[in-house]
Length: 434
Ligand SMILES: CC(C)(COP(=O)([O-])OP(=O)([O-])OC[C@H]1O[C@@H](n2cnc3c(N)ncnc32)[C@H](O)[C@@H]1OP(=O)([O-])[O-])[C@@H](O)C(=O)NCCC(=O)NCCSC(=O)C[C@@](C)(O)CC(=O)[O-]
Ligand SMILES: NC(=O)C1=CN([C@@H]2O[C@H](COP(=O)(O)OP(=O)(O)OC[C@H]3O[C@@H](n4cnc5c(N)ncnc54)[C@H](OP(=O)(O)O)[C@@H]3O)[C@@H](O)[C@H]2O)C=CC1
Image 1 (cartoon, rainbow, N blue to C red):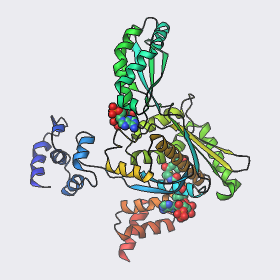
Image 2: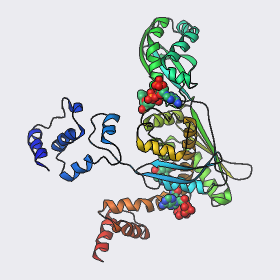
Image 3: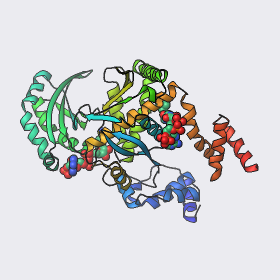
Image 4: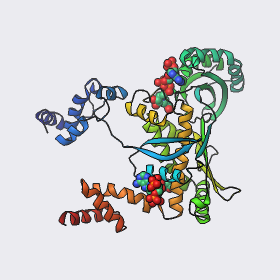
């Protein structure tokens, strides 16, 4: 630890308080020194955090608050994907081994036919919550009658969006029964074009709130978008020929795995987690909001009142495996980090997308490919064989292997069919002693 950090340890160490006034006004390096003193980080850890890699420290410090470093996640490329007849290389940012390989593997097995995709639109929903409304049913109609006024107010909020062909599209007013009375919830439905649109629709909701309070005769609390973006669905469909995936037993095993997920929320959560392995990786690589997409996906999976699979698998008339996915995908090419993060910009350039709609379609196809590979592995050899073979390198590194030792230890773990930390430690000793 350097002298400055040591001084801080003595100053802060005696009083390890997390109450640090004005932390946000310091520079990343000043904050890092304070944190190092608080947590007793060694010089190596401090130097590691201070190295922001390929993200400009000035930009990092503007993207979020109280920055002290960056967390680098590998970006891998999924190959073999053909989407709507076009070959695409897919950048995926993930920390999990075998995720990228799984997409490559699925896409290789239906490369000739590829994936066909569609979307339901680019529409986002903003909600305005009114409470203490004496006559909710009549209030609903009073708001619906103001449609043109509401449209004009929304469109006036965002002339840029309007000039790009976006803006207000529709109005819904829902009555919700709650323990404290009937709430009147207004939905502003807005085409946000190539933006995810959170800020655009939130601005509209806040602008309209006083009018909605007046028209409803109640009080307005929340004014915020809904992440259940069910008017912005992305869909992908693919057929894997039975002969190309190992025969009818493999096909039927995959269908059965899907039916298990469709019937059981315990299995559906894992099934959908596998889908999100692919989806979140592309969402993150392109600088989009992973939490927004995750929330939308899981809410959509539970839309019937019972949590279920986001994909479906059937045997088609030719006896082949026909698979589909449908989920909300509110992603953009502008806004958030998409336009300012250089890695996101480069990933969007690799994808060659020029519209948010195309990006959503690609992401849906990746989710389906990811799910196909996981189900195929689970219904045949089991997940360990492929996944753990790739994960063996992580286990080798955790056991302390460095440089060429990593591949050697990983290979031996796979050969011995025992991808475990204790075994890796022993193998590492053997490798070092040989
Ligand atoms: C791991 C594989 C792909 C091996 O599969 P394999 O059949 O042994 O692979 P292969 O050596 O025959 O190669 C086939 C193709 O796979 C790709 N491939 C093969 N290896 C690599 C690699 N190292 N790097 C990149 N791509 C790779 C590549 O495209 C290759 O073609 P080629 O390029 O050789 O012409 C397969 O077992 C698999 O797809 N497994 C599924 C893995 C998976 O789903 N991982 C996610 C993590 S587990 C999880 O979180 C989700 C889960 C499982 O719980 C979800 C659920 O329960 O539903
Ligand atoms: N619950 C949630 O999910 C929430 C998410 N967020 C965050 O909001 C961010 C996304 O907000 P978003 O509104 O998309 O981003 P921005 O507000 O940053 O960008 C959208 C704006 O960009 C302008 N624009 C320029 N070109 C285009 C184009 N081709 N298509 C559409 N708009 C264009 C528009 O008008 P103009 O120039 O007038 O701005 C538009 O309103 C993410 O960081 C997300 O994490 C925020 C709150 C809640």
